[in-house]
Figure (tube, rainbow, N blue to C red):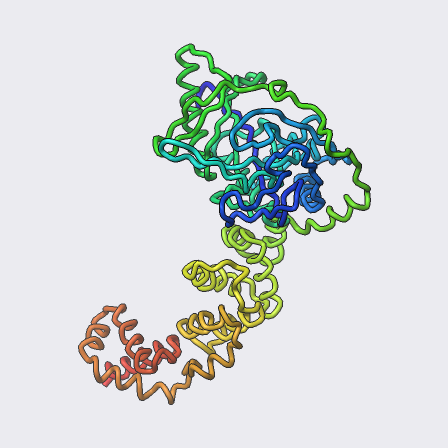
Length: 476
């Protein structure tokens, strides 16, 4: 934009990965039948008393530490009062005045620092299922531990918002705070966007965007809203502070309601939950459990393994994959070769089978053995892929598979000589074309030898022998 700067702040709601809800023992499974995981507490029955889930606190603290937040040791909850059909108590237990974490930041791969204003705990609401003429209420989600992560208005546009969300999601998955499955609603995002004149320090009137079901949806919604506000300001109109919904089919935002201020929620202390303070030892323990974060891992991989940034980005995109790579490297310390096979054939087979990493059974040692055998020429490319395919679900030893399937590569010239001469004799026309300069014909002949040897011939040795044999024919 020539006249305006785009200013974006993001509010990310993350369902924490606990087995039970934040204030009761009901399970948090998203696969259950509607309204089957509810009790008097999460269904809002009068007189039912909440009990705080310790696991939710532990996971929330890990997030705060990963985002470099200052921790408020006093745990203090309030009631956020509003009416909605999927909120059975007509209030939500949340944190407003004293969030769990404050003044944190998230560093992007570009080096940009996005400040985090607050990270606070609360309970999730239920879910409305809209039909043509009526709506249904499912309270299974009501009471699920929720963490709200509120960034400062530091994000410059839709692409940076996309990068921020992608990196934040990766951090949450690395520390196992959430599965971040947007399809199941365990990660949701609202965006605040405003425009300000270039050079101005004061922010413009912000508009909140909701109903975005993917990071791409967030990016598209911000792009549309930025253009809408630019056109409005260019026409001398004022931007109204409001909440707008993103319509993915029409690719536009539409007014939902005029935005409420915090006082509209009538916050007051939650009388059924005691305030308490967490100890330094408790905080230290949770901080030590974080482990290496994605950005730190990216920097270390670049120094230690000397592979491309594109490969590193793929390897660290999932903690399991990054750990598997490093474990395989211990057994076969050739980073480029291990990376090539992990990013190539391995991921291809995992993705084609719709498997999750935690269901893959092949060990890093067995995988490294397959890569080593291929690099050393013990098995060829096709054989290595076959061994990988057979062992990825069973972890059957590569040596056993190679012996059983008779996959050892034939590299001995004496063994290959008969096959090479046979192919030349059967394809004299192709040999003639090759002698006339059609280099691609040679690969056809190599393929014929591979076919006769049932894929066991060493392609490199076969090519060299074919070239030599054809030269000898030419010399006669």
